Amino acid sequence: MFPRWHIFLGAIFTALIWIFIPTMPVLYLSLIFLSSFLIDFDHYANAVMKNKSPSLKKAFTYHRKLRQQEKIDLAEGIKKKSDFHLFHTVEFHAVVGLLGLLWSGFFFIFIGMIFHSLLDLSSLLFTGVFHRREYFFFNWARKGFKQN
Image (cartoon, rainbow, N blue to C red; front, side, top):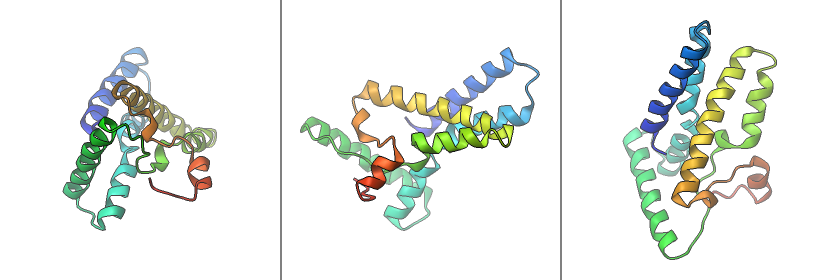
């Protein structure tokens, strides 16, 4: 899912929370909203490592080329994993959720991350590329830290 959709849907989600819980502090609403799309920083970090450049334009180009190759692979029946995204793993979510026991702000970050991940999962299922993502850090580590 493109970042603009995460931002748009994250804003709607946050607004709905605010409508149903109008007394929720703005800080917590902000944490939910920001975490609903900033979790995608790991996509940018991967592109920076691959391109060896911090250019946001190059990062978008890198991911556009990945999507194009993914379409070609699917048409040929090839099902490969994509880049590893640490912030999208179950373990990372669990750590943030557990940190919520120490500071309540992490709980609201966790809510935004869960919302983001549910959007991603539905998008991956809908587009038929659920196989592309590694959902568990330890599976990725066990396989030898391979990117693809």
